[in-house]
Image 1: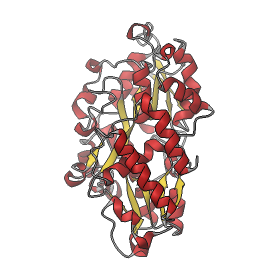
Image 2: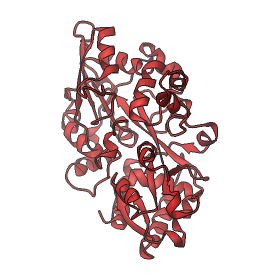
Image 3: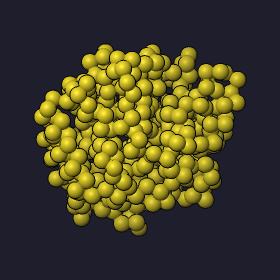
Image 4: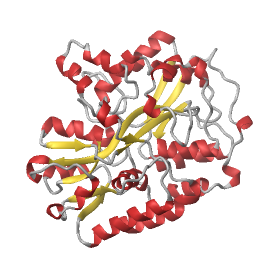
Length: 396
Protein backbone atom coordinates (compact mmCIF):
# COMPACT_ATOMS: atom_id res chain seq x y z
CA UNK A 1 0.00 0.00 0.00
CA UNK A 2 1.19 3.58 -0.67
CA UNK A 3 2.07 5.47 2.47
CA UNK A 4 -0.23 8.18 3.76
CA UNK A 5 1.10 11.51 4.93
CA UNK A 6 1.14 10.47 8.57
CA UNK A 7 3.91 8.09 7.60
CA UNK A 8 5.95 10.66 5.72
CA UNK A 9 5.71 13.87 7.71
CA UNK A 10 4.88 15.05 11.24
CA UNK A 11 1.62 16.60 10.14
CA UNK A 12 -1.46 14.37 10.16
CA UNK A 13 -2.01 14.21 13.88
CA UNK A 14 -0.12 17.45 14.35
CA UNK A 15 1.63 18.90 17.34
CA UNK A 16 -0.20 21.53 19.34
CA UNK A 17 2.45 24.19 19.24
CA UNK A 18 3.32 26.49 22.10
CA UNK A 19 1.34 29.70 21.90
CA UNK A 20 2.87 31.51 18.99
CA UNK A 21 2.51 31.94 15.26
CA UNK A 22 -0.76 30.60 13.90
CA UNK A 23 -1.46 28.82 17.17
CA UNK A 24 -1.72 32.18 18.86
CA UNK A 25 -4.66 32.99 16.63
CA UNK A 26 -6.11 29.58 17.44
CA UNK A 27 -5.75 30.20 21.16
CA UNK A 28 -7.34 33.63 20.83
CA UNK A 29 -10.42 32.31 19.07
CA UNK A 30 -10.48 29.13 21.12
CA UNK A 31 -10.64 31.19 24.29
CA UNK A 32 -14.00 32.53 23.23
CA UNK A 33 -13.29 36.01 21.89
CA UNK A 34 -16.90 37.22 21.35
CA UNK A 35 -16.23 38.69 17.90
CA UNK A 36 -15.12 35.31 16.61
CA UNK A 37 -18.47 33.57 17.13
CA UNK A 38 -20.82 33.45 14.14
CA UNK A 39 -24.53 33.12 14.82
CA UNK A 40 -26.55 30.51 12.90
CA UNK A 41 -28.31 33.10 10.74
CA UNK A 42 -24.99 34.43 9.44
CA UNK A 43 -23.42 31.17 8.32
CA UNK A 44 -24.90 30.49 4.90
CA UNK A 45 -25.18 32.15 1.50
CA UNK A 46 -27.48 31.22 -1.41
CA UNK A 47 -26.45 27.76 -2.61
CA UNK A 48 -25.30 27.65 -6.22
CA UNK A 49 -25.18 23.85 -6.40
CA UNK A 50 -28.22 23.42 -8.63
CA UNK A 51 -26.71 25.45 -11.46
CA UNK A 52 -22.99 25.36 -10.69
CA UNK A 53 -21.94 21.71 -10.67
CA UNK A 54 -18.66 21.92 -8.85
CA UNK A 55 -17.08 22.17 -5.40
CA UNK A 56 -13.69 22.80 -3.81
CA UNK A 57 -12.42 20.24 -1.30
CA UNK A 58 -9.38 20.80 0.96
CA UNK A 59 -7.77 17.67 2.38
CA UNK A 60 -4.47 16.32 3.71
CA UNK A 61 -1.80 15.03 1.31
CA UNK A 62 -2.07 11.37 0.33
CA UNK A 63 -5.39 10.86 2.12
CA UNK A 64 -7.41 9.48 -0.77
CA UNK A 65 -7.02 6.52 -3.12
CA UNK A 66 -4.87 7.03 -6.20
CA UNK A 67 -4.17 4.98 -9.29
CA UNK A 68 -1.05 2.84 -8.83
CA UNK A 69 0.15 3.70 -12.33
CA UNK A 70 -0.81 7.38 -12.23
CA UNK A 71 -0.81 9.01 -8.77
CA UNK A 72 -2.50 12.09 -10.20
CA UNK A 73 -5.66 10.06 -10.77
CA UNK A 74 -8.07 9.42 -7.90
CA UNK A 75 -10.42 6.59 -8.90
CA UNK A 76 -13.22 7.06 -6.37
CA UNK A 77 -13.28 10.81 -6.92
CA UNK A 78 -13.31 10.41 -10.69
CA UNK A 79 -16.20 7.96 -10.40
CA UNK A 80 -18.16 10.51 -8.36
CA UNK A 81 -17.68 13.11 -11.08
CA UNK A 82 -18.84 10.75 -13.81
CA UNK A 83 -21.86 9.66 -11.78
CA UNK A 84 -23.04 13.11 -10.74
CA UNK A 85 -21.58 15.56 -13.23
CA UNK A 86 -20.04 17.49 -10.33
CA UNK A 87 -16.47 18.64 -10.89
CA UNK A 88 -14.35 18.49 -7.73
CA UNK A 89 -11.33 20.72 -7.28
CA UNK A 90 -9.35 18.59 -4.84
CA UNK A 91 -6.62 20.54 -3.03
CA UNK A 92 -4.05 18.81 -0.81
CA UNK A 93 -3.31 21.87 1.28
CA UNK A 94 -3.78 20.78 4.89
CA UNK A 95 -0.47 19.90 6.52
CA UNK A 96 -1.18 20.88 10.12
CA UNK A 97 -4.42 21.56 12.01
CA UNK A 98 -3.21 24.79 13.61
CA UNK A 99 -1.60 26.03 10.42
CA UNK A 100 -4.81 25.50 8.44
CA UNK A 101 -6.84 27.14 11.20
CA UNK A 102 -4.66 30.20 10.89
CA UNK A 103 -5.02 30.16 7.12
CA UNK A 104 -8.81 30.28 6.96
CA UNK A 105 -9.80 31.81 10.31
CA UNK A 106 -9.54 35.47 9.20
CA UNK A 107 -12.23 34.89 6.57
CA UNK A 108 -14.48 32.98 8.96
CA UNK A 109 -14.11 35.55 11.74
CA UNK A 110 -15.05 38.30 9.29
CA UNK A 111 -18.08 36.47 7.85
CA UNK A 112 -16.39 35.87 4.50
CA UNK A 113 -16.11 32.82 2.26
CA UNK A 114 -13.00 30.66 2.63
CA UNK A 115 -13.19 29.63 -1.02
CA UNK A 116 -13.68 26.03 0.09
CA UNK A 117 -16.86 23.96 0.21
CA UNK A 118 -15.47 21.03 2.16
CA UNK A 119 -12.56 20.60 4.58
CA UNK A 120 -11.08 17.68 6.56
CA UNK A 121 -9.50 18.33 9.96
CA UNK A 122 -8.98 16.39 13.18
CA UNK A 123 -11.92 16.16 15.55
CA UNK A 124 -10.23 18.10 18.34
CA UNK A 125 -9.93 21.01 15.91
CA UNK A 126 -13.41 20.38 14.54
CA UNK A 127 -14.62 20.96 18.09
CA UNK A 128 -13.20 24.48 17.95
CA UNK A 129 -14.94 25.22 14.64
CA UNK A 130 -18.26 23.93 15.96
CA UNK A 131 -18.00 26.02 19.15
CA UNK A 132 -17.21 29.12 17.12
CA UNK A 133 -20.12 28.58 14.75
CA UNK A 134 -17.82 28.43 11.74
CA UNK A 135 -19.41 25.42 10.04
CA UNK A 136 -22.86 24.71 8.68
CA UNK A 137 -25.28 22.05 9.83
CA UNK A 138 -25.66 19.34 7.20
CA UNK A 139 -28.97 18.25 5.70
CA UNK A 140 -29.12 14.56 6.55
CA UNK A 141 -32.13 14.14 4.24
CA UNK A 142 -29.55 14.44 1.47
CA UNK A 143 -27.27 11.89 3.12
CA UNK A 144 -29.10 8.56 3.53
CA UNK A 145 -25.86 6.57 3.37
CA UNK A 146 -24.36 8.53 6.26
CA UNK A 147 -27.51 7.95 8.30
CA UNK A 148 -27.46 4.22 7.53
CA UNK A 149 -23.79 3.28 7.52
CA UNK A 150 -21.89 5.55 9.96
CA UNK A 151 -20.25 3.43 12.66
CA UNK A 152 -22.30 3.66 15.91
CA UNK A 153 -19.07 4.29 17.86
CA UNK A 154 -18.63 7.55 15.93
CA UNK A 155 -22.20 8.84 15.85
CA UNK A 156 -22.29 11.24 18.74
CA UNK A 157 -19.01 12.68 20.08
CA UNK A 158 -19.29 15.19 22.92
CA UNK A 159 -18.33 18.16 20.73
CA UNK A 160 -20.98 17.40 18.08
CA UNK A 161 -23.82 15.35 19.48
CA UNK A 162 -25.62 13.55 16.70
CA UNK A 163 -22.92 14.55 14.19
CA UNK A 164 -24.93 17.51 12.92
CA UNK A 165 -21.89 19.47 11.72
CA UNK A 166 -19.23 16.81 11.07
CA UNK A 167 -18.89 13.44 9.36
CA UNK A 168 -15.82 11.22 9.87
CA UNK A 169 -13.60 10.88 6.81
CA UNK A 170 -11.28 8.27 8.34
CA UNK A 171 -10.67 7.17 11.91
CA UNK A 172 -7.77 5.75 13.85
CA UNK A 173 -6.73 4.43 17.23
CA UNK A 174 -4.08 5.89 19.50
CA UNK A 175 -2.54 2.93 21.28
CA UNK A 176 0.88 1.39 21.88
CA UNK A 177 3.29 -0.04 19.30
CA UNK A 178 6.23 -2.19 20.34
CA UNK A 179 8.86 -4.55 18.99
CA UNK A 180 7.87 -7.91 20.43
CA UNK A 181 11.03 -9.76 19.41
CA UNK A 182 13.47 -7.20 20.79
CA UNK A 183 11.48 -6.59 23.98
CA UNK A 184 10.93 -10.31 24.56
CA UNK A 185 7.52 -9.95 26.16
CA UNK A 186 4.05 -8.58 25.55
CA UNK A 187 2.73 -5.17 26.46
CA UNK A 188 -0.83 -5.17 27.75
CA UNK A 189 -1.19 -1.93 29.70
CA UNK A 190 -0.19 1.72 29.50
CA UNK A 191 1.63 1.26 32.79
CA UNK A 192 3.84 -1.35 31.13
CA UNK A 193 5.60 1.59 29.46
CA UNK A 194 7.08 2.49 32.85
CA UNK A 195 8.77 -0.91 33.36
CA UNK A 196 12.50 -0.89 34.13
CA UNK A 197 13.47 -2.86 30.99
CA UNK A 198 12.10 0.00 28.88
CA UNK A 199 14.06 2.78 30.54
CA UNK A 200 15.16 5.26 27.90
CA UNK A 201 13.47 3.23 25.15
CA UNK A 202 9.97 4.80 25.25
CA UNK A 203 8.52 7.73 23.28
CA UNK A 204 5.28 9.61 23.80
CA UNK A 205 3.50 11.88 21.37
CA UNK A 206 4.31 15.54 21.90
CA UNK A 207 0.93 16.94 20.89
CA UNK A 208 -1.36 17.62 23.82
CA UNK A 209 -4.51 16.58 21.95
CA UNK A 210 -2.82 13.46 20.63
CA UNK A 211 -1.35 12.25 23.92
CA UNK A 212 -3.49 12.87 26.94
CA UNK A 213 -6.45 10.52 26.40
CA UNK A 214 -4.50 7.24 26.21
CA UNK A 215 -2.44 8.20 29.26
CA UNK A 216 -5.63 8.96 31.19
CA UNK A 217 -7.05 5.60 30.21
CA UNK A 218 -3.96 4.04 31.74
CA UNK A 219 -5.12 5.57 35.01
CA UNK A 220 -8.58 4.04 34.62
CA UNK A 221 -10.26 7.30 33.61
CA UNK A 222 -13.40 7.40 31.47
CA UNK A 223 -12.13 9.76 28.77
CA UNK A 224 -15.62 10.72 27.67
CA UNK A 225 -15.95 12.73 30.88
CA UNK A 226 -12.47 13.38 32.25
CA UNK A 227 -11.74 16.22 34.69
CA UNK A 228 -8.98 18.76 35.23
CA UNK A 229 -7.71 16.62 38.12
CA UNK A 230 -7.38 13.69 35.72
CA UNK A 231 -5.32 15.83 33.37
CA UNK A 232 -2.97 17.01 36.10
CA UNK A 233 -2.55 13.43 37.37
CA UNK A 234 -1.30 12.49 33.89
CA UNK A 235 1.08 15.44 33.84
CA UNK A 236 2.43 14.48 37.25
CA UNK A 237 3.08 10.92 36.05
CA UNK A 238 4.75 11.97 32.80
CA UNK A 239 6.90 14.47 34.66
CA UNK A 240 8.05 11.69 37.01
CA UNK A 241 8.92 9.45 34.08
CA UNK A 242 10.87 12.24 32.38
CA UNK A 243 12.78 12.80 35.61
CA UNK A 244 13.81 9.15 35.91
CA UNK A 245 14.92 8.92 32.29
CA UNK A 246 12.16 6.53 31.22
CA UNK A 247 11.09 8.59 28.19
CA UNK A 248 13.63 8.90 25.39
CA UNK A 249 11.84 11.85 23.78
CA UNK A 250 8.50 13.29 22.69
CA UNK A 251 7.71 12.94 19.02
CA UNK A 252 5.52 13.85 16.10
CA UNK A 253 4.89 11.17 13.51
CA UNK A 254 8.64 10.54 13.40
CA UNK A 255 8.21 8.02 16.22
CA UNK A 256 8.08 5.40 13.46
CA UNK A 257 11.77 5.97 12.66
CA UNK A 258 12.81 5.27 16.26
CA UNK A 259 10.71 2.13 16.39
CA UNK A 260 12.05 0.79 13.10
CA UNK A 261 15.67 1.54 14.01
CA UNK A 262 15.35 -0.16 17.39
CA UNK A 263 16.30 2.95 19.35
CA UNK A 264 12.82 2.70 20.87
CA UNK A 265 11.11 -0.52 21.93
CA UNK A 266 7.65 0.86 22.78
CA UNK A 267 5.78 4.05 22.00
CA UNK A 268 2.46 5.80 21.65
CA UNK A 269 1.38 5.13 18.08
CA UNK A 270 -1.42 5.38 15.55
CA UNK A 271 -3.02 2.24 14.22
CA UNK A 272 -2.74 3.26 10.55
CA UNK A 273 1.00 3.73 10.84
CA UNK A 274 1.55 0.31 12.35
CA UNK A 275 -0.21 -1.47 9.48
CA UNK A 276 2.44 -0.05 7.18
CA UNK A 277 5.31 -0.86 9.54
CA UNK A 278 4.16 -4.45 9.93
CA UNK A 279 4.42 -4.99 6.18
CA UNK A 280 8.20 -4.69 6.55
CA UNK A 281 8.63 -5.92 10.11
CA UNK A 282 6.08 -8.40 11.51
CA UNK A 283 7.74 -8.15 14.94
CA UNK A 284 6.14 -4.74 15.40
CA UNK A 285 2.82 -5.07 17.16
CA UNK A 286 0.01 -2.67 18.00
CA UNK A 287 -1.97 -3.07 21.18
CA UNK A 288 -5.17 -1.55 22.47
CA UNK A 289 -4.35 -1.60 26.20
CA UNK A 290 -6.56 -3.47 28.63
CA UNK A 291 -7.67 -0.13 30.07
CA UNK A 292 -8.74 1.09 26.62
CA UNK A 293 -7.53 3.34 23.81
CA UNK A 294 -8.64 6.51 22.10
CA UNK A 295 -10.69 6.36 18.92
CA UNK A 296 -10.31 9.54 16.88
CA UNK A 297 -11.37 10.84 13.50
CA UNK A 298 -10.42 13.33 10.86
CA UNK A 299 -13.78 14.71 9.83
CA UNK A 300 -15.47 16.43 6.92
CA UNK A 301 -17.08 19.82 7.51
CA UNK A 302 -18.77 22.44 5.33
CA UNK A 303 -17.41 25.87 6.32
CA UNK A 304 -19.59 28.95 6.55
CA UNK A 305 -20.56 30.69 3.32
CA UNK A 306 -19.64 27.72 1.17
CA UNK A 307 -21.28 28.28 -2.21
CA UNK A 308 -21.84 24.61 -3.05
CA UNK A 309 -23.25 23.10 0.13
CA UNK A 310 -25.60 20.60 -1.53
CA UNK A 311 -22.82 19.37 -3.79
CA UNK A 312 -20.58 18.87 -0.76
CA UNK A 313 -23.31 16.96 1.07
CA UNK A 314 -23.73 14.71 -1.98
CA UNK A 315 -20.01 13.99 -2.08
CA UNK A 316 -19.91 13.10 1.61
CA UNK A 317 -22.83 10.70 1.19
CA UNK A 318 -21.16 9.10 -1.84
CA UNK A 319 -18.18 8.09 0.30
CA UNK A 320 -20.52 6.38 2.76
CA UNK A 321 -21.62 3.81 0.20
CA UNK A 322 -19.99 0.57 1.39
CA UNK A 323 -18.40 -0.14 -2.01
CA UNK A 324 -16.78 3.30 -2.15
CA UNK A 325 -15.75 3.21 1.52
CA UNK A 326 -14.13 -0.18 0.91
CA UNK A 327 -12.06 1.13 -2.00
CA UNK A 328 -10.86 4.03 0.15
CA UNK A 329 -10.10 1.84 3.18
CA UNK A 330 -8.05 -0.56 1.06
CA UNK A 331 -5.78 2.31 0.13
CA UNK A 332 -5.45 4.46 3.27
CA UNK A 333 -5.52 1.63 5.87
CA UNK A 334 -7.13 3.67 8.63
CA UNK A 335 -10.13 2.58 10.71
CA UNK A 336 -13.02 2.60 8.27
CA UNK A 337 -16.05 4.57 9.56
CA UNK A 338 -18.34 2.36 7.44
CA UNK A 339 -18.44 -1.14 9.01
CA UNK A 340 -20.46 -2.48 6.06
CA UNK A 341 -17.38 -1.98 3.86
CA UNK A 342 -15.85 -5.00 5.54
CA UNK A 343 -18.12 -7.43 3.68
CA UNK A 344 -17.24 -5.73 0.39
CA UNK A 345 -13.53 -6.21 0.98
CA UNK A 346 -13.98 -9.79 2.16
CA UNK A 347 -15.58 -10.65 -1.17
CA UNK A 348 -12.80 -9.10 -3.24
CA UNK A 349 -11.15 -11.64 -5.57
CA UNK A 350 -7.72 -10.20 -4.76
CA UNK A 351 -6.50 -12.15 -1.72
CA UNK A 352 -4.40 -9.30 -0.32
CA UNK A 353 -7.35 -6.92 -0.51
CA UNK A 354 -9.75 -9.46 0.97
CA UNK A 355 -7.36 -10.02 3.87
CA UNK A 356 -7.83 -6.40 4.93
CA UNK A 357 -11.37 -7.25 5.97
CA UNK A 358 -9.93 -9.31 8.82
CA UNK A 359 -7.51 -6.65 10.03
CA UNK A 360 -8.79 -5.31 13.38
CA UNK A 361 -6.85 -2.07 12.84
CA UNK A 362 -9.16 -1.32 9.90
CA UNK A 363 -12.30 -3.05 11.17
CA UNK A 364 -11.95 -3.43 14.96
CA UNK A 365 -13.34 -6.69 16.30
CA UNK A 366 -15.88 -6.88 19.12
CA UNK A 367 -13.27 -7.12 21.89
CA UNK A 368 -11.30 -4.18 20.57
CA UNK A 369 -14.42 -2.08 20.02
CA UNK A 370 -15.41 -2.55 23.65
CA UNK A 371 -12.15 -0.86 24.68
CA UNK A 372 -12.39 2.17 22.39
CA UNK A 373 -13.74 5.58 23.36
CA UNK A 374 -13.83 9.09 21.92
CA UNK A 375 -12.28 11.56 24.34
CA UNK A 376 -14.04 14.66 25.52
CA UNK A 377 -12.24 17.54 23.84
CA UNK A 378 -10.31 20.19 25.73
CA UNK A 379 -12.57 23.22 26.14
CA UNK A 380 -11.58 26.78 25.27
CA UNK A 381 -11.36 27.73 28.95
CA UNK A 382 -9.09 24.76 29.72
CA UNK A 383 -6.79 24.93 26.72
CA UNK A 384 -4.37 27.73 27.53
CA UNK A 385 -3.44 26.53 31.02
CA UNK A 386 -3.36 22.89 29.99
CA UNK A 387 -1.20 23.59 26.94
CA UNK A 388 1.18 25.68 29.01
CA UNK A 389 1.72 22.90 31.53
CA UNK A 390 2.01 20.13 28.94
CA UNK A 391 4.38 22.09 26.73
CA UNK A 392 6.72 22.75 29.66
CA UNK A 393 6.99 19.00 30.26
CA UNK A 394 7.43 18.19 26.59
CA UNK A 395 9.83 21.03 25.92
CA UNK A 396 7.86 22.83 23.24
